[in-house]
Each structure stands twice: as C-alpha cells, then as structure tokens.
Length: 119
Image 1 (cartoon, rainbow, N blue to C red):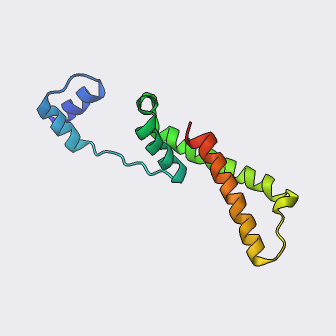
Image 2 (cartoon, helix red, strand yellow; image 1 turned 180 degrees about the vertical axis):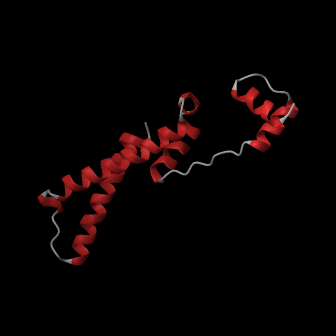
C-alpha cells in the first residue's frame, strides 16, 4: 500500500499492520508541546500521583496550557490584591522591601500549587 493509502487508513481509524504503522510513524512526526512552569508541574504530578486522571484527560496539551494560563491570572490577581494591603506596602528600605516581595511571592506560589496545580 502506498503512503497516501496508509495515511487515509490511519486517519479513518482502521487497523494497521506492523509495517504500515512503521511507515505511518515515519510520515507523521510527533508534536512536542512546551509548557510553562505550572503546566510542567501539573503534568509531573498527574504522571506520578494521579495516573487515572492523566489518562482520562481528553486533550492533555490544552489542559496543561490552561493550567499555565490560570496560574498566571491567579498570580496577577493575588499580587494586585496583596500589594494593596498595609502589611505588604513597600517602604523604600531595600531589604525590607525584598522580604515583603519574597513573602508575597511565596504566598502566591503556595496558593497556585494548592488550588490549580495539585488538584
């Protein structure tokens, strides 16, 4: 069977022989998806701790990109909210401001991991 016939057969969901599978794999290059920090963490968590959910997600790349997007939205919203609190106002004193920023970053990171990544 020619390459076009094998491609049509594979796209139609018909059974392929071992030789046809080898030809199909040589014709179709796998797509490598790149995820951000939180998408990568979510993928690793699902692979190691929640395999049933990992295999049941219909469109994993879309899900993981969604995790990244949700994490960034949450980060922006939390930073805006926390930076307005008196406890986290910047004073202009360098070391104090660094500690405040680190504390805000740590709070946001913990919340993102708890609410978005490790679910």
